[in-house]
Image (cartoon, rainbow, N blue to C red; front, side, top):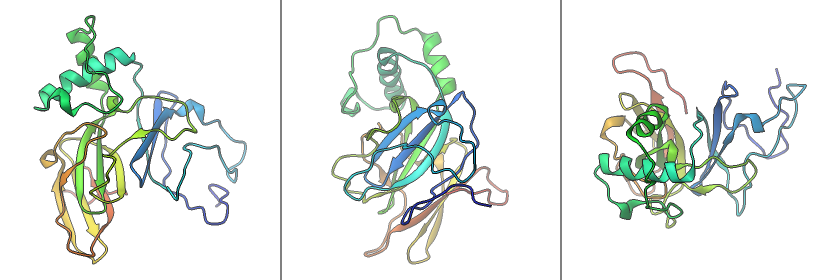
Length: 230
């Protein structure tokens, strides 16, 4: 059956089940991410509706990933304070702060708030065409209205090539990367570095000249049949 009416040249990227307590995050190949409440996408009468704009695309950009992540209401000050503490836990410094983040921590930020935000945190895995990857905190992606261009999800120079995939993972998960030449590698998530949203990544797959990562699959548990999603 038709799930969505698509214009010529338009392709479906993903489909996910969500609730009113979730956020939707779209990430483009040029390293832009936009996060908005699922309630901003209205319920349509028919399956063959065209939908509403989630992200504004320019200069040939295209959406490569759509994820559903846990919503958490936090002030900008609490987000900054949490990320400052989160970087310290990961062994990063304030110099690793994102370009639009203020490094000053809120004096009213308590340990209870940190625990609550940590429990609601999603780890966002991002992988590029040249095999670079990183983990970042979902709290590093501010909740904004849909239809904009979003915020930086990768360094501006894009030295790792275009973004291929970006989605939430658990630290005990594994991922599988497959390249354009048919090579593949299975990598534990806990071996990938935690970094800020607008930072670059580390080498996850050592691609050869002319070779690029074509697909990234999520593997929920070790030792089981692959339960993968792109």
